[in-house]
Length: 542
Image (cartoon, rainbow, N blue to C red):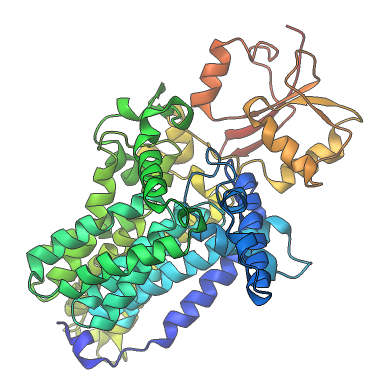
């Protein structure tokens, strides 16, 4: 146990400040992003969940719960579209609640996105608490800032899908497991939190693997309470939060397991990945793909500090168990991508949970670099008159190490999902090397829609190709003019092309882009650093 843990004198109030700050920042910027590929059905499913909960509460008051508990009604509310909404409902319940509680002046899309903003805030606060217990509150603050300034993390804090919720629940589950080693009350919390994680996304089923391996190595005589909570509490929480499992629970749990395991083998749930100019499926990607992609989408200073943190793991015997827990979780998440049936499309989306553990390791690296710097400065006579020179040097070091990440988030916003670091030359270098520049449709921003509404002529016909469904959704929601005709017929005036090149290559091979002349410049585009993400072309007869 470290001195910070023994003394218990570290301030806990910054955790609340971090939570509020992270939430408010994500909420303030949530409207900057276009609606992403999966969000429309998730929004609708959230509405169905909340409507059922409200109906159930009303029927409970009037003693007629049988109406709500009818299996057909439950399936309509909780299993409405298993293809487009395949994951358990916990994160959608949270988004549904934030939407229902939002005042009328809050944009509809933003109101749902307050859900992932809450999960992002929770993750940042728990990173602070955990690292502070191990090191110090400045190191904990560095960890919270690090995880919040990883561009992909900040980007997914604004998208109402399951990836940020899973990342938060994975970290909180690991934290409660670690605390449960010493205190049975935290074991109870672990059982509840893992149950909620199971109600969030399929990979949560595997969270105990690195936790139990760690416990058997470092605390093999202390984790019985965690096992009991995991076996007795978590299944109850998982089923209680998923009404779909209330009827035929064993059969439907098997259905849930089959859906999760089989996604990588079904063509309708597997998409190509652009890897050095080739469109390949998950099972054809090299085994190092998850490590490679993580290395080129993490800010360089945080990545370097993470590697220093791994070295620290072997040198600091007092903190080694906790550091090993960070490392095992990070390694396990990345190794999941090497397992048969793994689904790896959509950039870092499937590995998003790794970043929190990397930030914790990076904070350890920062702590020891700051200590070494302080020891070098202490005997310098010219600095003897400077008060708290070591603390000031540590603060300056933290700023120096975090500014590159801050600059990246600002420069890429709201296209953080397109971030690549300097190891591949940034986005432009990655684009030249044949990596995917964009994939999730967040690049169809409100400002691009405004351009279409203001510039397209009356009754213009546009073909958005594989994004037609999203343009239709915008039109239904009043974000795109009603007179604009969205079509996939042969006759149209304009084409909107999302530069997801793994799919664009397929369209080109099928001659679905023949209406765009070779070398034809777009009428307008959404671009970043000279790389086009979305393009508007005038269509020419084939």
